[in-house]
Amino acid sequence: MLLFWSEEHVSKWCRDWNLPRGEVLALDTCWLLARAWFNADRREPSWRRRTVDEAEALFAELGLTSPFWRLTR
Amino acid sequence: MDADPEKISLDARVRRHVYDQVIGEGLPPTIAETARALARTTDEVKLSFRRLADAHILVLQKEGEEILMAAPFSAVPTPFPVTVGERRYYANCIWDALGIPSMLKQDAVIDASCGCCGTAMRLEVGGGGGGGGSLLAQDMGGRAHFAVPAARWWDDIVFS
Image (cartoon, rainbow over all chains, first blue to last red; front, side, top):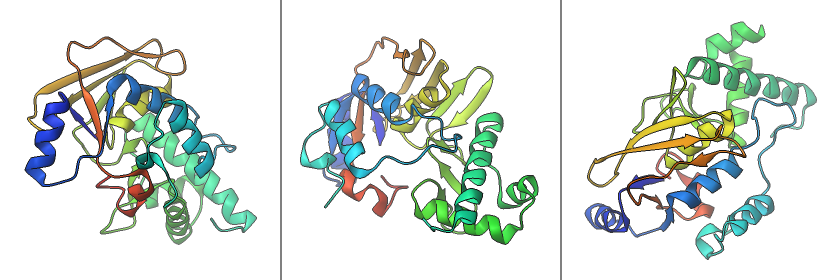
């Protein structure tokens, strides 16, 4: 997951590296995703990874509902 | 994850030690350091690292058994340096870079750059970083590109 100056820079990078374009998030959305995803303290004994359903529900809360964000194949 | 309670208990202690070290020192511990700290053998720690990697909690170096990633932290320098107070961390990607102040619940400065052209892009997180934190207004648009669909992230997490 790389950072780019703009949508145009994402497109140029994909062309230059001959890679398909994935999903592009505004930084505000990426921040909300990071804040929710990493909110828990991983040092705590009770910490555990999210289940697939929990992770997909979090994506959905942020409007990330396209097939790209599905964790099951 | 192995269902053996002893291994589960050890893995929780190893996970705690790894994150204590990376948060406190900026880098995750080695196998030898972890073994000394927890009074276990290096073989026990290697196996624990492997179980934590199989559970997608750690990522190990491909040419060895040491830690490469303890998300959101990287064990090696990356293009995503994150400064929190006087401590410098490295994140694995832009998502993880924003995840460090989220996890630490502290303000942070991320001195990143455009993945296409290298133009400097400094991001600042304020408000204490955690649930009340905010990404401060930027003078550029800025976009995060997720190149790999979510279901395939762990096919090659280093590339993802």
